[in-house]
Image (cartoon, rainbow, N blue to C red; front, side, top):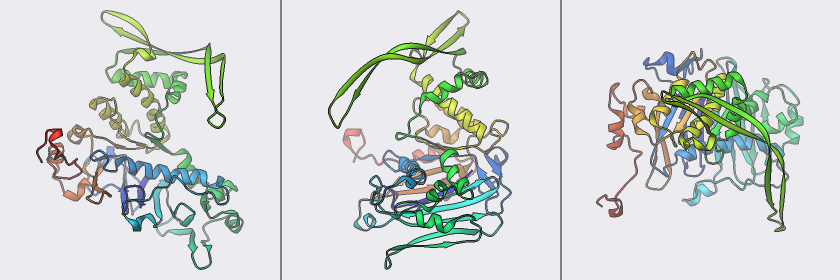
Length: 423
């Protein structure tokens, strides 16, 4: 489970911002909305968190920061000598931040062990990197790396907890590679769980990693997953009695365009094509619809339900930017409540999402107060992330009304006659 994420100098997140999934001492809904970890430092971790804020306030950048960190972990071992991190974007609206490194740090719990891993980087190289492992109350510093400007070299310090060919991995790690990634690339068993958490236990859905229908399509081909998806759609008041997937050969016309040469190639051939049929049953009759006959909301819910059911089954961490896109507020509530059901979420899966749906704030029993976060764009265009708890709200406070009245900030500033708002 995700414990905490920190980032600094990434896009609009200029100053260090911290998202914590550590539950407060409030006992409200603790048994359903949090998981007992057995750790003194973080006795309970939240199963979900929601982030609110105005458009262009930085909500998406928070998710993109973790996404960028994940990409560097997974891909840096393949970097070539001298290759740069061209897509890295530090805060651009002041001169000092442009020359400062970007920082990331993640803390997560895996199989009862807490890992705290982070690194700092600029477009040219990794500036620092560290890993702390909490197998007991005291942390073990498995490794620490920092770039020494005077010598122009990376300085490494290793702890006794890290086993394996440490100096071989060190020698093979280029300045633009993470030691973690290179060591796993060279078969480090000790560091594999950390790398694997990024690779297989963290799922991100946003504009850079859009929802793909293929995962749900594959689940629909299996009896038990298909029934689970069908039953959820039924529970969502969609009159689908059954879902049928057939694969057939069809003639497909393909056009390939080579940007380098300007050459266009066309081909036609048989390919396997999946067809989805939805069986609807009402009091007055039955009908079968193709996928494109269904509404965009039903299609989005179908494509989202498959991954979410798999995430709940495997106990993964899911981040979604704008979960409420094309979904009714009650459907969003239903998806969130799945993560709060211990009988369904048996593996400690977590959901972190951004939304503009303020009605969720007062939905009965949907969130504890420590699950609600806000982002606000400051006057200098940098982003501030802060929890609802900073305002010490009363237990039965009308959160939606308070938010829309500006009590917690994180609202758009409207003062333009064109928008119907007086200056």
